[in-house]
Length: 572
Image (cartoon, rainbow, N blue to C red):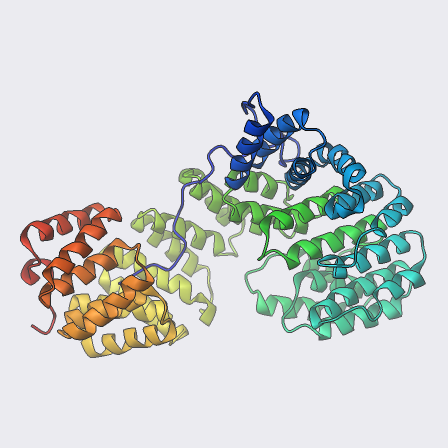
C-alpha cells in the first residue's frame, strides 16, 4: 500500500483551549467558564478539563472548589501546580504557601515554587534555606546540587559552589551537565582557564553535539578571543544539523561583530538554566512537569528563548496549538530560534484548519530568505496533505531550484515530489523523482515501497518491484502499510497464499486502516473464504474509507469481488 509516511494534517482536538494572556501568551483565566455550586462538582469538572488539557478552565474549576474546601491538601496541590504549569505563577504562590503550612516540606514541588519565587524576588539566602529542606531523592538528586551551587555562587561563595558539583555526577549525561555548570560558575568567578577546561571536558564526553553546550562554549571561546575554536564548535553542530538557523548570528559575529555577552552570570540565570535542563531531561516522560519547569525557568529569566521554544513545543505536542503559537510568537525576529518558531507557527495554523494563513506565512518566509528552501518544502507538504497536488508540486520545484547540489539528506524532497506527481497521474515526472531519491538513499524503505507498489500497479518491472518491497519490509517489518504493499503486490503477481499471509499480518499491525482491511477482503474472496471477505469489507466501511473506496466496497458486498472490474493479478 502506498502511504505517505508523513504526519497528516489534524484538526485541533481542543477547540476550547485555555485563553491566553494578551501580553505574555501564557495562561490566563478561561473566559466563559461556568463554575458549579458545589465543591465536588467543580472538582470533577476540573479533573475532566485537565484530562482534556484545557488547563485554564481546569484551574478555574479547582479555584472554585477551593472556596468551599480551602484546606484540602490534594485540591491545593492540584490547583497550584496547574496554575504554575499554565504560567499563572502569581496565582499559584499563595496556594503553594498555604500547602506548605498544612503539609510542610512533604510538599516538594510547593517548596520548589516558593523557593524560586524567593530567588526571583531578590532573596537568594531565603531560597537557599528553602531548598535545603528538600529530600535528595528522585529528580532532586541531580537538580538540587545545581540549585545549591548557583545560590552559593550568587553570594560569591564560588569555591563552595563548585564543591557542590564536584564528584556528584553518576553517569555521562550528568558529567556533561555538571561540567557545563562548573564552567559557567568558574567564568562568573573570573576563573577563565578553569572554565575553558570544564567546557572542553564536557564537550569531549558528548556522543552528539548539544545546542546549549555548543552555544555556551562557543560564546565563551569568542569572549576569550579564540575565534577559530569557536568556529570549530559551531561547525560541528551545523554538520549534524545542516538546516538549523540557530547559530547564524554566531557566525556573523565571527566576521567582525562584537563579542557576545555572558548568558549566565547570576544565581537567577543559573537556576533558570538548571530548570531548563530539568525540563529537557524529562520531556519524553512527562509533558506536564516539563511545562511546569519550563514555566519556572521563564519566571526567573523571561527572555530565555530556548525555554520558550521548549514550552511551545510541549503545548504543540499536547495539541494546544493556538497556545503554542502564542508562545512561538514571543520569540523575537532577532533570535536564532525565530526561523524555527515561524515554521512551526505555519504548521500549527494548518492543523487548526487555517491553511491559507499557513501558506501565506510560509510564502512570506520563502520571500524573506531566498537562500533557504525549507519554507517551500513545508508549504509543499501542507498542500500535498490537503490533496492540492498541483500547488504542492510547484512548491517542491521551487524548493529544488534553490538547492545547488543534492545531498543524501534531500531524499525526502525527491520522495514528496514524486508523490505529488504520481497523484496528478504524471508518472513521467514522478518516476525520475523516486529514482533520484533512491540514488541518494538506496535502501530507503518508504521510497522502495512507493515506487515498487507503483510499478506493480502499472504492470512494469515486476520482479524488481517485488524485491524492492521485500527489502522495505525487511527494513520496517512492523510497518503495516509496507507489509500491506507486499501482500497486495503478491496478489497482483498471482501468489495468493503469500498475499493472504502478508495481508493478515498487515491487518494485525494496522487494524484501523480501511484500505488494508479492504485488500484482505479481496484476497479472501479469491481463495474461497467468502464470509471472511464480507466481514473485512464491512469492517472497512465502519472505518470510514474515502468516498471512492466506499463505493467500490459497497459494490463488492452486493456483487462480490470481480478481478476484471477491481484489478486482476498482473500475471493472469
